[in-house]
Structures are given as structure tokens and as C-alpha cells.
Image (tube, rainbow, N blue to C red; front, side, top):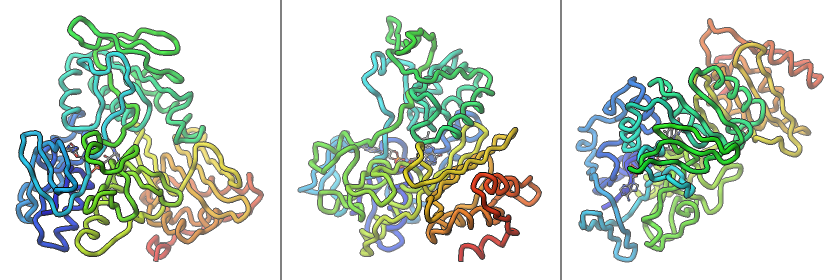
Length: 442
Ligand SMILES: Cc1cc2nc3c(=O)[nH]c(=O)nc-3n(C[C@H](O)[C@H](O)[C@H](O)COP(=O)(O)OP(=O)(O)OC[C@H]3O[C@@H](n4cnc5c(N)ncnc54)[C@H](O)[C@@H]3O)c2cc1C
């Protein structure tokens, strides 16, 4: 029997690909929920746009039809010699092949009061239920850690008219990832949100509690300010959920160490998704890739590998997308927070609208390296194709119209973008008429 621990996007995709190629029994074990749901949609439940059932991509019959057994239980130990799992309820389950898809958990850094009532990260369905309970009558909340999950939590709380005080360690928002112009754009966008109070270059010192161990405020580290609040959200990043795996002897570092075939150090044991760490990261990529599509792709690879078609993880060029309140963000290729040696940068920023494009290219060869895009919608397929074919920045800008995903009647900005580029780099590029985008990707 193939056993998968974790019913998130990685584990479920692995199960689907096993079933495509084999009739071997499959069991997915998860302590969080019986059915797979979209973690990225958790915020919309809190905001009242969806119910929990709406976040489940498959009907309950899907699992029966595909002969995938679902078990809601917690795995406590893994015995890789006997190929045996022990559950919290004492039951044992044996496996022929084991896939670890155990996801991640919110970071805690040993802050005083971090386990008090009314303090919580935002990762699981249980976290969401907890946040729902502890913010019911809250007037003010503090969020610790400025990243994408922190932004989501701020947006959620503001919809309930809870005043949000947001502590960000960096001087500029998400500046470990975003270059300065992008970080500043987000910061000015955040300023527009009534009830949101940003604290930059600030960290949590301790969480203050009452005699019932309930959070009543925080103390900040640098300004030693006391902020009264009824809820504290911990969103200072996530780390692989692997504590229960460590005693098994399966090699770990920050995550479970895997090779390109997603094999761990133990025979017939694989790791995928947020919990996996590549021993040798792919060129230009990080050892831990903790986003939705990378988990899905790892699941697909491992599903094929364990059913007889060894498939290395090779996801192509990096891309990602997110939303910072109303601003949409896409990134294709690499735009590092600090300019790299031998690279040139071109930043287009609209004078009044929240639109910013940041292109990076090689100085000598003019090879296009990556783009950060805020406020427009650019086609993934075209940018992926441009990166694969190592086209120049000139080609990218000339054909930018074809890569624009926005409908015909949307205002277009390509002429202005290319004009600024020509002025800055002394070129005389002209915007080409939009080609049908499929022509550019075949
Ligand atoms: C609030 C939020 C918003 C996000 N938004 C985005 C986004 O917009 N775009 C994007 O690309 N990514 C986003 N992400 C990240 C993305 O959701 C994750 O990368 C992805 O869901 C990870 O999937 P996974 O299958 O690896 O793990 P998970 O989805 O974490 O699934 C792991 C499962 O394993 C279970 N498990 C762990 N240990 C055990 C055990 N011992 N026994 C039984 N079960 C166990 C867990 O309970 C969990 O259900 C977001 C994440 C969060 C938290």
C-alpha cells in the first residue's frame, strides 16, 4: 500500500498521479481535515466570501471513485526498517512506499507569551477556527512579521473592523524579497487602509498576558512601546513541519532532504511540498520551495516516479503571484531585492496609478533575467517561453503588448514604458502590434 502523510496540494496530487498509473491501494492520512481543501482560500472563509466546503476542489465521491482511502489521524512515528507507521490512537499502518507531504508550520522564536490564549499563526483550518474564536470581540490586533501571510491576516481582520498594528522587522515592506521601489509601492498602498498601523524596523519583544494567560498586549523591541490588543497573529514565516519525522532517522536539515527524484535517505520514502528540502537546489532556485504550484508539481513527479516512470523535479523558470490588498503582483524569472553584478535594471512606475514593472537583464548580452509586475497582468506562458529561449530585454519590451493579459478595452501602458526605456538606455525600440499570444509560445 502506498501511504501519503498530508492531504494538501502535494499529497493529493501525488495520489492522483499514482492512481492514473496504478491500481495499488492508496491511503492519505491527515490530522487537519478529512478532505483536501485549498489553503490559499482560508482567508476568504473568514471574510465571508466562501464556506469551508467551497474550498474543497473535489466532491466527496471523488475519493471513493478513485479508490483513495482518506484517514483523519495523526502519525506519531515512522519506522523505516519495518515500513510501519504508528498513529496517535495506537494503530499501526504498514506501507510499501511512503510519501511525506506534511507541509509547514508558522515560526515561533521563543517569545515570552507566544503560547498564550489569543496568540496564533495562520496556516491551518484549526488556526482559522482559533482566529475566528479569539477575534470575535476584539477591537485591536497585533501582527508580527511582514510577509504575504501577514498581509492576508491584516486584510482579514480589517474586514471585521479590528484595528491592526503590524510589526515589520525590515525598514521597507518584504524587502528581503522585494527591491526598494516595489517595497515602497506596497508601503504607500498600505497607508491607504484605514485602521492599519504599520511599524517598520520593529520587532516583538514579548506578549503580555493577564492572570488567565490571555494575551492583552505586546511590548515592542526597539521603541519599547506597549500596544494593548486582544489578539496577536504570528506571521514571521513558516518552516517545514518535520518534528515527528526527525526521530525516524530520515535525514533532515531545515526540511526533509531529497534529491531531484524527491527520494529521502530512507528506501521507498519520498518527501514533497513545503516539508521537502533539496540537497542540491536547482540552478537559480532555492532549496525550499513553499508555494502552491511547486507542491503540485512535486506531487506529480513523485506520483509518476513511484509508479515506474522516474521523473525528476524540473519546474522550469521561477514564477509566483500574490495580492497585497488590491495590488496584484506577479514575478517571472529573478528580480533580486538587491541589484546583482553584471545586471541592469529598468523600473517603470506610473506617476499616479499603482503600476510598477521592474525588468532585469544582463548588461553585456542584454539577456532578459526577470520581471516584477504590479498592477498589470502578464501572461505566464509568454514570459516562461522568453526565459526558456533566453531572449533579450529589447525583444521583451518590443512584444510587451502580446504578453499583456488585460482585456482589449483596458488602458494600455506599453508605449509609455518603451518611451521611458529608450530615454534611459539610449535605444530606439518600438512597440510591436500584439500578436496572438499562442504564436509566441509555439
Ligand atoms: C494563509 C496562506 C496563504 C497562502 N497563499 C498562497 C498563495 O496565494 N499562493 C501560493 O503559491 N502559496 C500560498 N500559500 C502556500 C501554499 O498554501 C503551500 O505552499 C501549500 O499549501 C503547501 O502544500 P503541502 O501539500 O506541501 O502541505 P500542506 O497543505 O501544509 O499539507 C500538509 C498536511 O499534512 C498534515 N500533517 C502534517 N503532519 C502530520 C502528521 N504527523 N500526521 C497527519 N497529518 C499530518 C497537515 O495537518 C496538513 O494538513 C499560502 C499558505 C498559507 C498558510
